[in-house]
Amino acid sequence: MNTASKYDERCEDCGSSSCEAETTWCPSCGLDYHADRLRCPRCGVTPGKYTHVNVYAVTRHYGGPEEGGWWYNAGEPVASIALTEDDDADQVAAAVERKYIDLSEGDIYLVLGGVQIEVHKQYHFAKPWPETRPHYE
Ligand SMILES: [Zn+2]
Ligand SMILES: [Zn+2]
Image 1 (spheres, helix red, strand yellow):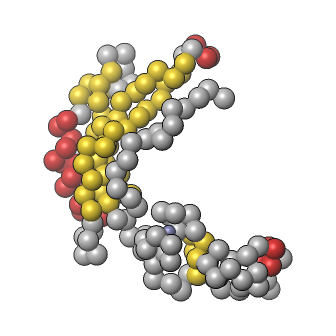
Image 2 (cartoon, rainbow, N blue to C red; image 1 turned 90 degrees about the vertical axis):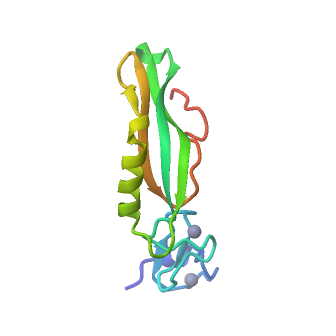
């Protein structure tokens, strides 16, 4: 049985409002596309296949005085390793972490602060985060 919502919305892949194809969600660009495709028709990312292992230097920043003061983490790219079809993202991430972990200093959650190295498997080249400075809500 088809759910009504299938007919309420146009398929993001083929544009048809009566498309009944199974769809899958692209973790890179967010497009819902036909699940039988090998990769996202918009950005070319293969689902479940990370494209980059990114290394970030994470520091803690003062957000504002609300509720006695709040803080947030921000990451600056240190390295971005592009994965090939044959790479195992987990293995690359483990090797990269061993290589960069010494750059960590101190503890970002303590008063003296420091830098924490984080390795992320991602679907894009390393980019600073958060994209905009967070605001208190
Ligand atoms: Zn469709
Ligand atoms: Zn995509």
